[in-house]
Image 1 (spheres, rainbow, N blue to C red):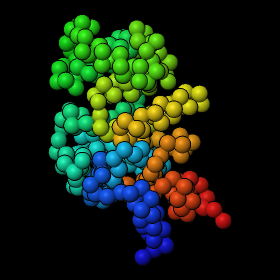
Image 2 (cartoon, rainbow, N blue to C red; image 1 turned 90 degrees about the vertical axis):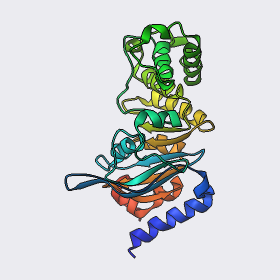
Image 3 (tube, rainbow, N blue to C red; image 1 turned 60 degrees about the vertical axis):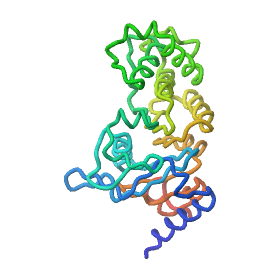
Image 4 (cartoon, one colour; image 1 turned 180 degrees about the vertical axis):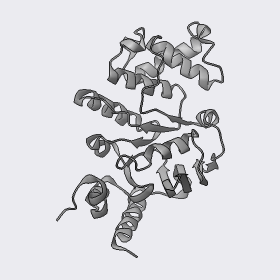
Length: 272
């Protein structure tokens, strides 16, 4: 066994002891997940476990396979082999809409809102969609008290109540990311997949997003993909590092940060 494998396994074992992980408290996990494009494996026999009630961060260089993994978790992409489990239910073949209804929701790297509609209607559309209705029936949404109340509650949760009547196109970049999270919260998820929520943000906006995600940690399990290392180390209960489709380390952030292989592969030169 190589030194790097030994260090990775040690981190994983220590993490299990420090976080109290058991199979029973896994909210989301993959088993032997493989996805290839041509001769390149974007996910390579990947076993990942996200503990119930935790914020688990996933980091890695560009091209490591992070977005491919997230796409398989939410059902936009099917693995070549392997399984995805949500609370120990095999959801590998389940379509995205069904996964949302079961409590697994995703935000996107590119803000996916309807710019011509106001913030509250955007969230109401999301609540309507989760209830099994089509977005095309947008006119009744404005009159539906249930959807509008869900939207108002979600906007309040992310700090956008005062911007409810503003069109999404008029919101700042950071506010649109808050709006996107409000739209996901309208689905009342049990597990939230966050795909680079700080992308394109300045320092002040990133700090507000960190504060928001910190406040959500008591309400929903989260898997966070993010390049902002300050945000990652401020938020993560556990941290996994993905390089060329393989996890090279998983553990508590302080252990992963000091891991020599992680330093070489992603965070910088190994410490002396």
